[in-house]
Structure formats: structure tokens, C-alpha cells
Image 1 (cartoon, helix red, strand yellow):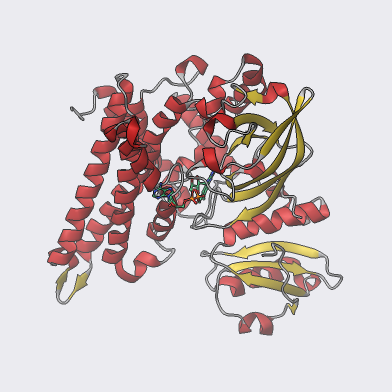
Image 2: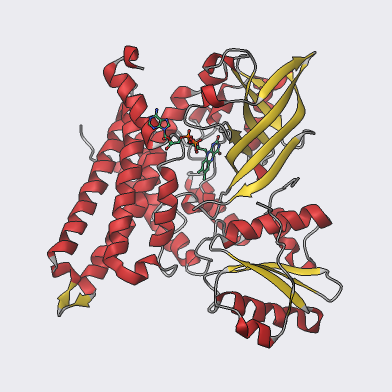
Length: 388
Length: 111
Ligand SMILES: Cc1cc2nc3c(=O)[nH]c(=O)nc-3n(C[C@H](O)[C@H](O)[C@H](O)COP(=O)(O)OP(=O)(O)OC[C@H]3O[C@@H](n4cnc5c(N)ncnc54)[C@H](O)[C@@H]3O)c2cc1C
């Protein structure tokens, strides 16, 4: 495979890198090390900039007014956009805009008018409520939230756990069991406005990640009209699989940015910090850590770009996307760990971004399908369906 | 686990502040009637953690601020947001000098 960048990609990568270095890093110098947002005036100014650059709403498909980037270019941008302290979960603090929940692109026209388009215009926010206290790796079997039909409405009761952004969301995509089928054929997706009576955000779930915190939800006989069903009744799991696999690629790419930045910081540190009469860079133990970092970074990059190229050329890419997610999250975690070791004491302080990346990368190995689930996806593809 | 800040109130003065460890965390500052004047956090940018943050509160509110309670946590950002949301739920609005946060924080419906 040829991983060299074309002229346009080179320009986009350089522009994004300059944007991060000249616009984001200086602002971060003055923010709390765990901050998740910019001052509103800075946010507005930078959004205006990304709009004028034609980069706003990166993930919005072209037919919906997005810039129409292919997956490879989007992944290359994700590698650049995450090279700052908040970059893992708040790449560039969201000034490149969002695309909303992937599943909404499969909605009816009326549903798109009500939820998707206002989201693309930045007027509404949604959250994705799949995981329950009973488990998230195998949601099809674990979902216990019930949806019972009552006339033209459905009555939803149950709870959800670890739902990001539900406290600020205008609507939630909620998966509930609507038949006696104990597996994926008994689950329906509902779009529910969060001001619906019976919708409660009970608490913040504090994790290693300080921003975009997770929440616990409770649904208490929440009445939802039939027209809020996304897709078919009992067909909730069939929605937007291709789009979700595709999203896994920039998600993986976003883990590589902090690893690259941490490696640059460590090389610089190793050349300048002296112990036992010579720079750290002259010690073989440190050199090997730097080399191992480079191997992990390049391995992740190749996996991400291979998955992206397959997605762009219309080939099957499910295995490659799962591999990219697994490799990038695990390899970047190892890189940050070694970089902290190279830095010594200062590496674990809030004076440097390493400790935040260390904490947040740990979540990346669990969220969006844990490493074991990615292995499961690959095993199915490699061994064939009979070895489920 | 209860989500409210249910620690005992302490007198807010220079001596109590000086006796606190320089850790990170969240706190509430109130007047003598118990009206909460600030829901704040001591973050990594506060030189001496909770001590520096409370000194700023004393400076901001002057004699009106008479007591405080706090909780040490390294998750001060998400815990701070949680306390702001609880305050909003209980009182309908945030303390007057924190109104700007109102559009940023979300909604919580604690049991
Ligand atoms: C900060 C944060 C934010 C989140 N945001 C959201 C959100 O917005 N919306 C949402 O719906 N969910 C969200 N989640 C939930 C997340 O998707 C789940 O935590 C994840 O899917 C794992 O589910 P679980 O925690 O219930 O673990 P379990 O399903 O109980 O699994 C426990 C462990 O066992 C492993 N395991 C499971 N099956 C196998 C197997 N067959 N073989 C080997 N190992 C296995 C898993 O990989 C996992 O490590 C979030 C989680 C976190 C931590």
C-alpha cells in the first residue's frame, strides 16, 4: 500500500498543524490542565476561522453540506488535531464542528428535520444511550430497558450507565428491548427529547476523564410517540453499521496525535536532561524506549491508513477498522507510559500534558468497543461465521 | 454514594485556610445565613490548591463570606460541574457571580 500523501492532503495536514500550534497551544497555556472548553469568545473566533477555511463540520457527508473529506484525509487531520493537551476527547475544543450521531443519517426525512439538521447547524446536541448497568460489550443481550407499546406510543422504563453528555443533550438515542427475543432482534432505537417527562439524568459518573463526563440515566414510564422510532421496530441494531465502522478510523487516528507529541517532547527532554554526567539520550535504556515508541507510532499509523484506504476504495474494512482501533489505543498508551518514564517526576505532574493523555488513553481501550470486542470482531472475520 | 457536598461547614478565615493542606478539590462558600455565595474548585493552576482558591473567595466576597466546606478530589472539574448542576436544581439559578456558567453546565435530576 502507498501511504504517501498527495498534494492536497499535504496542504491540509500542514494547515491543521499550523492551526493547532498557533491557535490552540497558546490558549491552552492559560487554561486549567483538565479544561474541556475554551472561553466563549475564543471559541467563536476559532469557529469563524475553521468556517472560513472550509473545514467546519468535518464529518458531515458532502450531500449534507460537509467538506466531503475522504476517510484517509479525515484520519490524517485527526492525527494533527489531537496534538494538544485536551486533544484526545476535545480535539481543538470542537471548533471544527461535529456531525451528530451517525445513526441519524438513516432517519426519516421528518426525523432529520427535527433532530439531524438542527444538530448540524449547532442548535441541538444528542447523546447515545446504549450501555446499561448490566453491560456494554454485549449490549444486544444485556439491554434490560423495556419498551412496551401502548396505543400510538411506547412506554420506556429502565436505566443507562456511562452515557456521555446526557446532561447537556437535547435528545438521546435510546436502545430498548421491545420483544421477547433476548438478543439483537429484540432491540429498538428511539429518539427521545430529554425534556420528555420521565427522563432523568441521575448523576455524573466520575472517571479518569475530567471532561465529557459520563452520566447515569433513569427512564420512568417515559412515553415516546411511535414516530420517534429510528429504523424498524426490533431493528435497532441494524442501523448505520458501516458509518460506525468508518468513524472508528478517525477515532483510532486521534490516539496517535498525543503519542507523536509525547515522543517529540521526550526526544527533546532526553537530549537536554543530564544524569550521571551525560544526556539521557545517550543511555541505551532511554534510546530503546524512544525506538519502541517510534515502532508503536508507525505501526498505529500504518493500521489506521490501511483501514482508511480500504474504506475509501469501497473494499470491506471492518477487520482493518477494528485492528486500527485496537492497535492505536494500545500502542499509544504504551508510548505515553514510556514518555512519562523518560520524563521522571515532571512526567506525572499537571505541568505537562502527559498525565492527562495517560488517564484519557486508558478509557480509549474500553470505550467505543473494548480491545477484547475488537479482537472478537476480527476473529469472526478471520475464522468465519461458524466460529462465533 | 451521595452526590451532595455534605461535609461540615468551617469558619472562613485566614487561620483556618492556612491550616488546610494544599490539595485540589471542590468547595462551597456561604454567608452566615447559609446562602451559598460560590461553588468553586481548587485546580492545578492554584498555587497552593484549596488554600489559594479560598483566599481568592475571601478577596471576592469580603466579610460576607463566613464559612466554607470542601471535598478533596483530583476529579475537580467533573465534580465542580456536578455541584453546579445540583445548585441549579435546588435553587433555580447559580450564585450571582457565576451566572455565566449557567449556559455551560447541564441538567441533573438527583433522586
Ligand atoms: C468514560 C466513558 C464514556 C462512555 N460513554 C458512553 C456513551 O456515551 N454511550 C454508551 O452507550 N456507552 C458509553 N460508555 C460505555 C462503554 O461503551 C462500555 O463501558 C463498554 O462498552 C464496556 O462495557 P462494560 O463497561 O459494561 O463492560 P462489560 O461488558 O461488563 O465487560 C467487562 C470487560 O470484559 C471484557 N469482555 C467482554 N466480553 C468479552 C469476551 N467475549 N471475551 C473477552 N473479554 C470480554 C470487556 O472487553 C471488558 O473489558 C462509556 C464508557 C466510559 C468509561
